[in-house]
Amino acid sequence: MEPRGTKRTAEKADGVAQPWSKRPRPGSSLRTEPALYSGPFPFYRRPSELGCFSLDARRQYHGDARALRYYSPPPANGPGPGFDLRDGYPDRYQPRDEDVRERLDHLLRWVLEHRRQLEGGPGWLAGATVTWRGHLTKLLTTPYERQEGWQLAASRFQGTLYLSEVETPAARAQRLARPPLLRELMYMGYKFEQYMCADKPGGAPDPSGVVNTNVAFCSVLRSRLGSHPLLFSGEVDCINPQARSAQPPACYVELKTSKEMHSPGQWRSFYRHKLLKWWAQSFLPGVPHVVAGFRNPEGVVCSLKTFPTMEMFENVRNDRDGWNPSVCMNFCDAFLSFAQSTVVQDDPRLVHLFSWEPGGPVTVSVHRDAPYAFLPTWYVDAMTQDLPPLAAPPSPTD
Image (cartoon, rainbow, N blue to C red):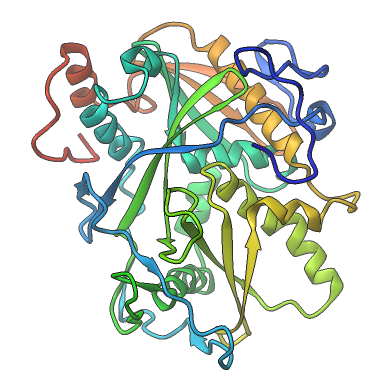
């Protein structure tokens, strides 16, 4: 599975791509320059949905699709959308408490409840990497990222490699000092979803309600990048009841907002930077379309545009300063190889912290227990003793 116009290496009999010629050798660090990963597109198995879960208005876990919303755009031949993205701010806004570090907890609860039903059984999970889609997205965009670093904590438990993001000191400082304008822009993104989604198929959106960012519908997916089996989860904005395929994730839609563009230079910057992140976020789970609302300086959506995920690369193909999907996926493959060869001791209390800042390589440090250990005791104990799934959702702070 690769974007149009990219070339992939011939697959071996078992479906694993041949390594590209510039693959970095294992060591204590991993370089990130794009030129090192410019080989053919690696093997990436088409993602298949294993299940889903929902988080309610109080951020409580439910193993069902109750939070799923349905794509309900305005008529294509009507006037401009005219969505006022500032409406309801801040009076009808309930943001999630970002000080609560949820780590992998919700995904781990799903794994615990479904571990016996996984295709391939427990043996498949023992060879997989388990993480959030957002963590993989950061890996994909790393070769082209120039501003924000990241940290990923990694632990091996019963053979499985778990990856969980750690908030960097710089990211924490930036979050705590977030200016009012940026907080309002974040609200606008969620408000756009409210204008574009209904609670039932064929229903109409109701933008008069509270925007509560605790609520989420999450898809759990299986894939493989190169030789690395993946089990990951990501939030889904909505499902399109009119999609050509009713099979998830092909029926899912990603919703985004951006400021209006008025010059070729603005579009060029949009394609180079924002579209890269949109592509990575949607390509990984196999979401076929991103629908963007373009807002004016007053925060009103004046136009909508659909970006097919598999065609996004076409916008930068001839741009010497653009991005390349092969580089993104090859680096992610290299990082997973680096992590697998580095984290060899099976111990849920042992953490290898992978750190990266723009312009440098990925480095590793080793820690035990707090503050970096992230696999909760309820998960470790249940998996170790093979207990039945928990009757009630655990607290993210447990």
